[in-house]
Length: 337
Image 1 (spheres, one colour):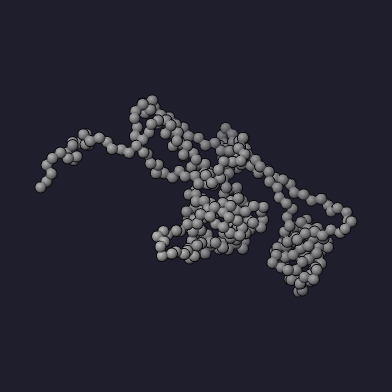
Image 2 (cartoon, one colour):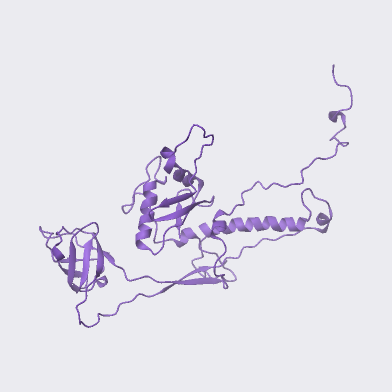
């Protein structure tokens, strides 16, 4: 038979007799994580001005390239040829081509033209080609000779600008006085919310920020903005299918492959004093990195968990932690030291 006693649906309009049952916890449903900032941690040296500068220096280069389209029919014995930067060479340098076994001894330098002794030390001569990378093994001085002309590099200043992040909080006295669900102090809660937003924006600017082209230090009419990682890395970019860098393959050129990642890390290792220890990617490229081990997984009959995750990538060129940040563009992978 139908229930005829007191029931919640009979308690009147809007259930005036029923006490509210509201959890005293507020859940934040918007993304506010800052994985890259958490990984970087606090700086060793705090910025104390609106312009933050540091000094970088490089060693004298020990590589160059052949810059000559045509050679004599017997390119194995050509003793004079042109290079990109003749000032990188000195008389007495031992030089070899990349992936070549022949060693040459530089006997004269005239502008960008080198005169060399081919097949030095009994090494086997190999044909020269345009754009062949040349590696300077080292210089051999003559005993008792005068010192060579001094060579040096110039240090360069690199800078970034400090961006001001602001947010305001205003709470009425009445709002402070009333009892709110899940909040003991409305003013303090609003401060926490705005702080989360500022940290979220800071991580986004660290990755995607761009400084102004004119008056980057800021003025009464120009806002001071910071250069992020993407805008700061100008010379060391790798793109699939360009300059000999392998294409991604798969469904599209933007898909990262292990061949690409290793090629980039190898190039960085060959041309810098450090190694990549941090890889920052969006969710799309993180899935590509996870797929590196897709066909190499092994499971026992008792395994009940399926793992599809690469958190650390260890290669011959460094051990790198993979950081997932939603603010990195989907077609971009950041390789950081």
